Structure formats: C-alpha cells, structure tokens
Image (tube, rainbow, N blue to C red; front, side):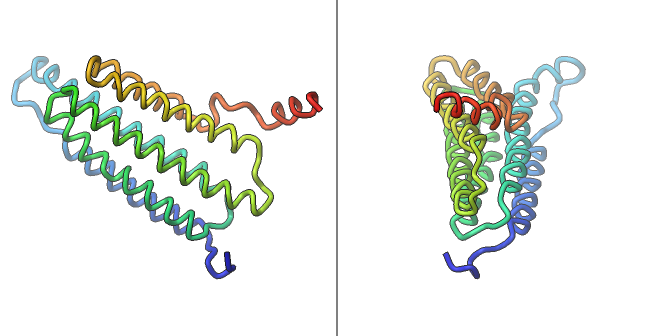
Length: 206
C-alpha cells in the first residue's frame, strides 16, 4: 500500500476512546432508581445492576485490550481503520441490547440477542487484531505472542457460541459464561504462552 495511505494509530486510538466513553455513558443513563423503598427496592434492581456490570466490564475490558493491541503497531493503513470502525459499530450496539435484555426481563430470546451482539463484537475485534497483525508482519515485528492471543480470541468466540445455544434453555448460565470470558480478558495476555517459551519449544523441536 502506498506510503501516503499509512498514518499514526494515535488518531485511531483517540477516536476509539471517545466512542467507547460515550457507549459507557449511554449505558449508565439506563439505570433507574427503583420505585420500592428500602432493601426490597434494591433487591428488585439487582438483575439490572448485574447486566449493567457485565456490559460495563465487557466494554471497559475491550477498551484495555484495544489500547494494548493498537500500541503493538506504529502504522495504521486503511484496512486497520475500517476494521476499527467495524469493531466500534458492533460495540456501540451494546447499550441497545443491554436495554433490550433488561426490558424483556432476561427472557431466553433477549439473552440470545445479547450474546449474539457479543459474538459479533468479538469477531470484529478479531478482524482488527488480524489487520494489525498484517501490519506487524510487513514490518517484521510479528511475535509468537501475537498468534497466541489470536487463538485466545478464537477460543473466546467458541465459548460465546456455547453460551448462545444455552441461552434458550439456561439463560442465566449463558450469561455466566459471558462473564467468564470477560474475566479472562482482564489482562490481555493471561493464558498466553510467553514468546520466549514458544521460541524455546520451537528450538527444542528443531
């Protein structure tokens, strides 16, 4: 790709930070004070707070992983920019699906749609990861750790798919699996074999 189509990822990250901040703000505005008084009122909104916590953690941890991913490259081409927009599109729909699942009181279909939105978001983030990996490969900076994190991303999508099928029979268990996937991404490289270990394994095989 011609040089003038390359740009610094700083603008991409700044734009993404702004969009993600708006997404979190929209979600928190959906929280309503219960009509009931005392503990009973608080108990009545616990499901709402739980779904909000999952959605907030989901969005916040994507923000952390986005920061970690974008800082791997010094250049962003058009493929990276469009992949980032595709990711932000799906992530920006999360407030709607969060409101939907709360409005429908966590019925099976609403949980199904909620998890489906997470799958599309995860898939779009994988595309962003692959587009940045392409830039790293061109710059000869792609590391074994990058490939390992891609596999972790793919495994997470598989768990989401399992949760998707569970949504109709066990919606609460399905949401628990989504929460589990969110937890394992708190640190982007948790569960990823260090580059040195992979290199040593490859050396020993040779």
